[in-house]
Image 1 (tube, rainbow, N blue to C red):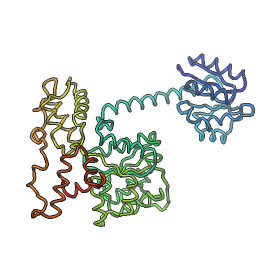
Image 2 (image 1 turned 30 degrees about the horizontal axis):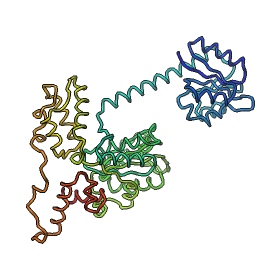
Image 3 (image 1 turned 135 degrees about the vertical axis):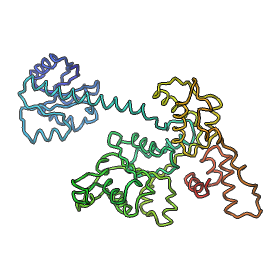
Image 4 (image 1 turned 90 degrees about the vertical axis):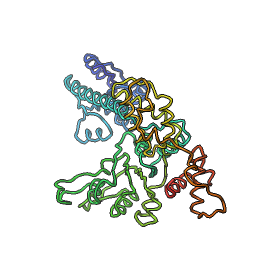
Length: 451
């Protein structure tokens, strides 16, 4: 089976017999007679399987599972003992043992155990391969970028990922809020646990509650069995609440309670359950206005927005062409074309267009261009007409001249001033510094002013 195996037993005869039996099956075997020796070996090299005796003179072999869980993370630990009992087996499995083997055992018993380990290894390799293929098949927007806005956002996201703080991601539709949420999960200590998405506007309040918290049999007409919700499915991981601004009013106090004490009940059930999940929410709505209008609970808003992150819209990013080239290679590979890059006129159109649909619109435009491309480069005529016709102009030129002291309102003066500062600034951060406000306030002001 070509496995590396560690045998931990204080009896030389047992170690010798196990080594002969395992080597006869094609395994490479190392031996240790104590906890200290086994720890030294596992730190030097990885093992696929470790056969560990429970009683090692005055030591307990199960201590390896307690103290060296990190070192044994990829090792299937098989506990051996001449004092086999059901409670002992249960204890070993709870501590993380892969299997429990009572002494004396036969070569066939070893083969069965190694066969199960081999199947587990095969599943792990398949999962790894699928993850690699998935990463290649989904051209998610990459956060790694030389753009200062994106670099600052990534830095903030990595810092918050190290905590369990609730995160609210605010931004226009299509800017990659879901991508950012997945990245935070991937950088966190919960990365190996589930990432579960709940789309808040997709269901009625009752069905959304069932989707989120689960329901008991008979909770409503079609509830024919007990069903766990997505909170339970996300146990230990991250729960992503997409478009939280559309959360129905009846659901808001229930979500608030869950955020406060991690407790909830399934729909139609009185039993109180708990869940250890990290919550990330996203919205393209102005939640401040929703709170002011009474459509969104202020206490829930504060619970959700311990940390706010604001992905910049595509028109404010300096890496538009790099993103387009990344998408181009993905779609060319998918379709089976060889396309080297983007022609200068097409590059000018891509960098000059405002991209109101942000990354989602850019992805669709590049996919279309790859389909229609006839040469080795994306030509300007391969792009959608709205992109080639819609190159940006100076925003100040789209409005009449406004003079200080003229017959204009304060609102018009503020709108024009913000518009011109945005047009002359290299980034949203720089514009916010000029205006003397923070970027999140400027983001909300732009939405209010329609800029």
